[in-house]
Amino acid sequence: MVAVALAVGYSGEAAFEDLGFIDSFLNASMFLSGMGPLLNPASTGGKVFAGLYALYSGFAVIAIAAVMFAPVIHRVMHRFHIEE
Image (tube, rainbow, N blue to C red):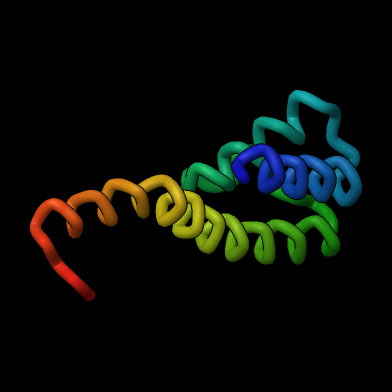
């Protein structure tokens, strides 16, 4: 899930801002981690993409955390005999 989210960000950064591999990866990973962009977008398309990717990244982080912690929470619920 993280790799797909990074690929989306990398592709958008490379397409809209004409950044190289390292700069696109860096910006995408900074967005996905919640830190914000390192390199500010210059084009209008880049700014729109950055805003949409930031929203997507927020939801992606929540979804990834849910997938990671669901088995743990499920096991705790079984341990304490919680039915619902």
